[in-house]
Amino acid sequence: MLESDSDNNSPLDLWYQERHNDEVSFGLHVKKVLHSSQSPFQRVDVFESTGFGRVLTLDGLMMCSDRDEFVYHEMISHVPLLVHPNPKRVLVIGGGDGGTLREVLRHDCVEEAVLCEIDGEVVEAARQFFPALAFGLNHPRAKVHIGDGVEFVKKSAAGVFDIVIVDSTDPIGPGVGLFSGEFYREVKRILAPGGIVMAQCESPWENKFDLAKVYGNLKDAFTSVYSMVGSIPSYPYGFWSWGFASDNQHPFHKIDLERARAIEKASKYYNVDIHRGAFALPNFLRQKLANVVENA
Amino acid sequence: MLESDSDNNSPLDLWYQERHNDEVSFGLHVKKVLHSSQSPFQRVDVFESTGFGRVLTLDGLMMCSDRDEFVYHEMISHVPLLVHPNPKRVLVIGGGDGGTLREVLRHDCVEEAVLCEIDGEVVEAARQFFPALAFGLNHPRAKVHIGDGVEFVKKSAAGVFDIVIVDSTDPIGPGVGLFSGEFYREVKRILAPGGIVMAQCESPWENKFDLAKVYGNLKDAFTSVYSMVGSIPSYPYGFWSWGFASDNQHPFHKIDLERARAIEKASKYYNVDIHRGAFALPNFLRQKLANVVENA
Image 1 (cartoon, each protein chain N blue to C red):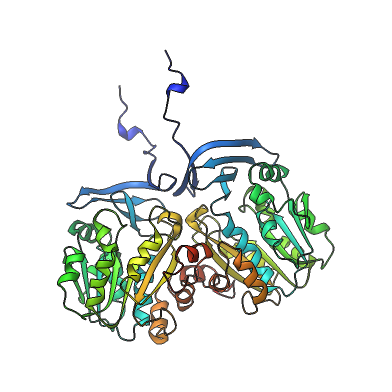
Image 2 (cartoon, rainbow over the protein chains, first blue to last red):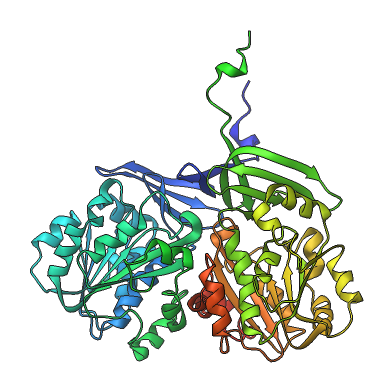
């Protein structure tokens, strides 16, 4: 005879495990699975973890957690926005959780932030389970568009955005089109003079994707590309990189210090020292990106 | 009837898992366990991993891997050695794997590097399984002493070392004595004028140990303490911190650039930009260490 559940005081010991490259895994203890669905593009799951708050995964891969999402979203947003002298129109490709929009819209000079996310179910999951992220999606200066980022960029008029942020998944599945030189040449066309692209570019420790190629696609379209790094415990290897690309902007020589001091006051990761320090690359990354990025 | 092993082409799918804080885990796929023993102090294991080369664990906790040991060993050594104007005598407490000695002895100005490791079985495991690390243990200018670091420091004469590196395990088990203010005051006594202490100080993301207390013990003994950070994928949260303490040295204002350029040429992580950038702390760490470290 089975005992009733109520007599059992030991809940299931559930662990989420992301096995990366079949050689390394990252795990989080799970309190409760809150949501699972299959969208037209990918599997979408949300769970409550013991140590990292709520977690969103796409096709089983970690996208963001309450505990450390701020690193990714602050760094991908504030670095280009505080280098550009007057960013008024910002486009975010991907980023359906809303975290990047939230940080972009902390800049009062931004008149409009457009988000183009391919998967409406990601946006819905954020609205339902991640209020702190969805804050960005609901902002009066945000415009949320559900559709293919590659198509959206192709159809946009020339020179209309000051900053384009590519907040994509890995270069597999729905994200693959956002990692090509052809895509970045189209992105360049829709940038106004002085425009900047910021794109997530995988972990410096990665050996599944060729980082020289990932960054090289940016370099195909822009005069100069720089690599920036930061600590994100829930991402593979706990260390992440982003590409800063433009034809005429340097990533930290002319930070707008007045605006930056205001942003850093309310940030959990970003400050002006971190901004500059994030472009200091370890030797092993300099070697991987030699002749591709300016700071290698 | 059991099939013979030779008919079985699927080896055991073995994973090492370090469950940290019961909330987060780090795992490595294991090819083969090479060594397991119980020393008088702790359990010592060595295994061959699929993606991180050979791995040493103590009481089941990751100590070092072939893939990323260079970060820890380069940063804990080169930063104090390149700031001190003329480091001749260096003491390493712990560090029985030999990696820190190896990096210290790349500096030709160092006349003698003394290691005091409590557990002789760690030194033996390094000599047997980690030749690239044990290189440091076998160096002609290295003196390896097996014994208690706290006692060794107490018995040392005043003012005899230029740099003391505390390359310890966590503040539990045999490492706990190396995290007290009393210990650091004894360390200060054996330092020559202008001396520097560099000590491992756990992950910035840690909430099992109180980082303000870990750094505060250094601050009990020295005029100024700075926190330095770096990316180590195989350590908890993938991000580590070290404390730089002294009465009169700044951690990056006067780097000896001539010596530094020679060191960075043969390093996998360290370079002068990384040296400076490693003292830029994220806001959340500045908050944890406010009023304790100078760069918070």
